[in-house]
Length: 86
Image 1 (tube, rainbow, N blue to C red):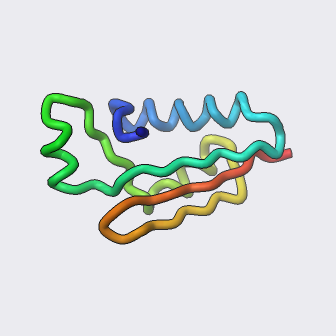
Image 2 (cartoon, rainbow, N blue to C red):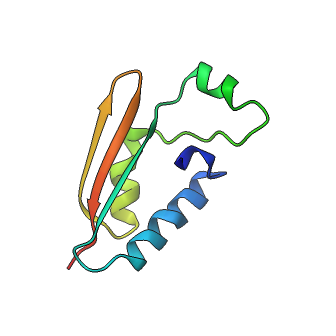
């Protein structure tokens, strides 16, 4: 669950490292819930740093991926797919 990564800097480091270790043409697939008051309350006393899906394409491209697709299920979750360039 990417929302357990403490901050955006560490999330971006994670994306960069995943891209680095994937084989050329490898696929990164990720999903997580959307930010909500209920989820924040559920994570009381825990790390809760949800990813804003509107920023995800740019962040994955900057990590070295291409062909990034981000889909959102309103009020529920997002899913992303990105390729490591060949």
